[in-house]
Image 1 (cartoon, rainbow, N blue to C red):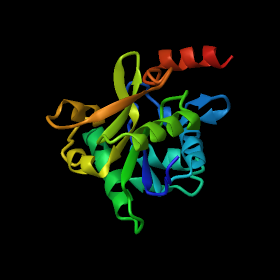
Image 2: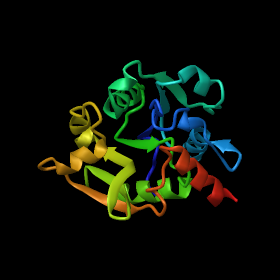
Image 3: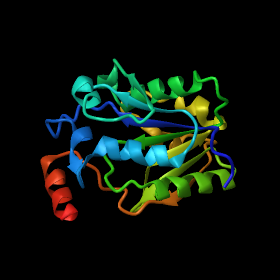
Length: 201
């Protein structure tokens, strides 16, 4: 695989978990908080500068995770939607002195995220010539997703609750996909947590 030190990673973990009523970033799966799991997978990817974006319950969350060298940044406008967290992480990555040609976004509430999946995503992206490569699960496009420099201006247009999937509808935006089995499973409610516990057993 091509060198990956020109890839920055943003872990989006700023949501307020309003539907769950407690920080889903700290929901335990196999003895580990889900945000910690995401951090551990990104660290194994061995890429360039990586950041964790926190917002809601930042003190509680930051006191219970080990960033393992990843920079933790605060999105003070996290209540305005996921796009604001993407922008904070995006700008932080680009402020790094290292040349960044690609940026990957990862969520903190996908318990089945594995470094092997991230490596496949990177390989597919670097072997192609598209602006972005999205994960695909059950016909749905989403994250983790990685974007080339040509997509950076598009990323800057996102607002409010517009996630990266919004870009796929824009004229001239070229992308490809990489399958992610079980990627659709995330945590939003106590029912999701209960289901996750049954899978864990």
